[in-house]
Picture 1: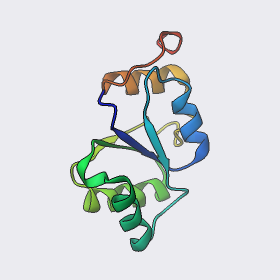
Picture 2: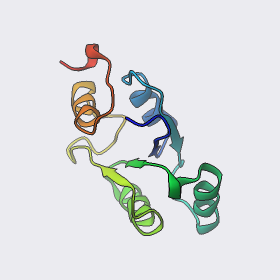
Picture 3: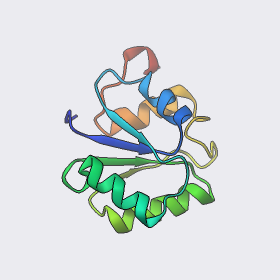
Length: 115
């Protein structure tokens, strides 16, 4: 996985849940919920999101759906990762399930999480 990739998640709990599983450096940005137009533009400019590999991993709920739609419009090159709808939240997704999702998208996951 490219060292300048970015993953966008909704909350700090999601970020912590993912970070502990990774065996690589990855910049993870928290949106803290839905984004206004101005904040979206700031993110794109501040992190050069339009020129870097971007991964979107948000909850399978209404706010996650809205956020995903915003990113599809503003960052059409982003790769969208989806958790199982049964878990609804990234932070509630069991570690082995989330580890498989990350590994299947070429992220380096610590072997302890690959059960």
